[in-house]
Amino acid sequence: MLNRFFFYKWLRLFCVLVLGGCSSPQVLVPGPIPGQSSVTPIRFLLTFDDGPSSATNQNPTERILDVLAKNQIQPDIKAIFFVQTRAARGGNESIHNLLLREHAEGHLLAFHTATSHHANHRFLEPKDLESSLQLGIDDLMKVSGSAPQLIRPPFWNYDARTLESYHRHGLQMLLTDLSANDGKIHGVNWSWRKRYNLFTQLRRVKMRWAEGNIPTVDGNIPVVVTFHDLNSYTARNIEVYMRILLQVAHELDMPVATKPFYDNRAQLEKAALTRTVQDIRSKAYIPGIWSWLWQ
Image (cartoon, rainbow, N blue to C red; front, top):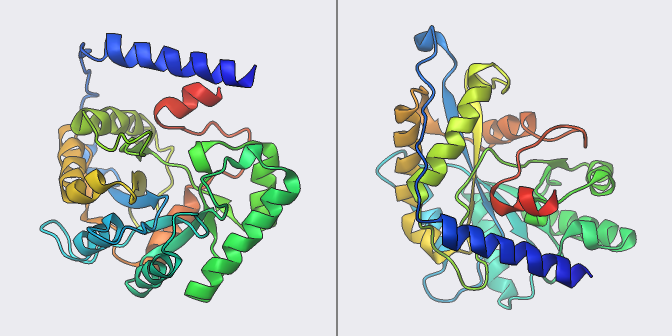
């Protein structure tokens, strides 16, 4: 029954993408906010899921790190990397070395999975979930010297049981405001509509921003953005993505901080912790098809 359920879910998704993908609905942009000049600016908080990559040639994680350090927008950008510490991809030494590099360059290591594959935490037996959480924490402590405080559930899927387990292990769950929807699924690793996708998601964020429903941290409102550093397309286009973020913020009349991206690990972590989900009853945004799938 479960397989049939997922078959019809994916069949429905295919029909939506194929039959509805050719039309472009009219985009209604919220108008300027009264007193716009005095509102708190936003600051983009970049996050990456699923890495590090074990690729030996043109490693996408390495390329993303290179671009974050040196680009034409803002030098020395810091990001959160939600990592898989025990993925069965081979090249464990190279993965460990990339974790060391991420930490040494001032990025923040956070937990994603410590299973051999990208296991959904909700589908793990309680003892297996507890074990994997502790393994991941131990793995990251060996790299950074301190326990991670942030976790992002695989497939954005969580429930009261998994959230309670996270908190029991000292982990706070961070979801996202915007997603590039660039996760690799069956070899698909490109994005057809980068600008439109980020524009529509930031337009939704603008509503909450205008209402004062996003906390202010150090004079800015952190807006969480998610990419996947296993994706070679993302690695080749990460600077393009960053430019799009600035452009759509301008189009939506959302002022951006003088430094539009975080460049300090402590400030990055502080901002991220204010955006975590504390209660299962909280209405949290789930990006892409995942909200539709899990609900």
